Amino acid sequence: MICTVSTVKDSLANITKFVQRNLAAGADHMFVFLEGGDREVFRFLDDHRHVTVVDTEDGYWHNGRPSNLNARQTMSANLVNYLLAGVQSAQWLFHIDGDECLDIDKKRLQGLGPEVEYVRLATRESVSTSVAELEDSVYFKRLLNDDELALLHILGVIDAPRNRKYFHGHVSGKIGIRPSMEYGMHIHEAKRLQGQTPENFKAEWLNILHYESFTAEEFLRKWTVHIEAGQETKFRDDKETIRGAVKGVLNNPHLDEQRKRRYLLEIYRRRLEDDVSTLLELGLVEEVQEDRHRHEPQTFTMKDLSTIDQVLPELGAVEKGYFKPQLTNLDPLELMEGIQSKLGNDET
Image (tube, rainbow, N blue to C red):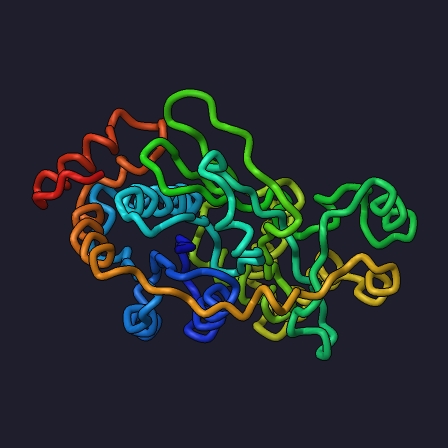
């Protein structure tokens, strides 16, 4: 089975799309750590047979909720990694965000030998446009080679001949591992806790679709919510500039709501909207391969479901420092052995 883990805070409509997309794209079960306490979203996730939701409000963070979103995401990912290390049918675990979707050849993935423990998904980023006919994000940008980047730079499409200027979000991609107590998961990588981490496996059929500010309205929603929530997330320099500009508009006492919107849309137009017509003419964008997104998700065996139902509450109740890989003196293996002993199960 293919599993995903995510830490999210979003509207019911967006969460519904997120779940539907990933289950159709190869995920069998999704673990979602919900922030913000939205009860309607929680009920939707809790009622879904292919989703396990964890409410991170009301005392979930015993010694104080980390202000850094990346830290919370990392701890959520490792909690599920250690949980699934004892679940026999869990073959792969991918750490993805709420605006991402798997784009994989599941048959090939499941056919990889046991020597492949760690795979990397290359980023495919949705075009960002205010053209209504293209707002369903059927076109995705791939990472370009040096000649293609040079051409776009000369044409004035991008500020510099680098993929980091072409993509508005991350270019590092995302990762998947075989659930294991030997690994610690991070945002864009995984590391073996002891010894050298093997090189991650890459292939043209392993991708992540990133719906990054794919419309002007999504840009407004994402950045307004992000800044009003006070999320302390590390960004590269160009995104820090965008964050500063958006804050400069939202916190400006001389602007009413209508004029704030006008300036925010101008930021979007100048810094994020893609020249889609040029990209299409040059053949630099691709459509989603629909045959990869017609998956019928499988379900856990009753035995595995029982293990998850017993172990997950135990993990949710402990100090979350156990899930900071290599950053604390807390030993996750010792934790898991203690939980298994408590539950009368010697498997780890």
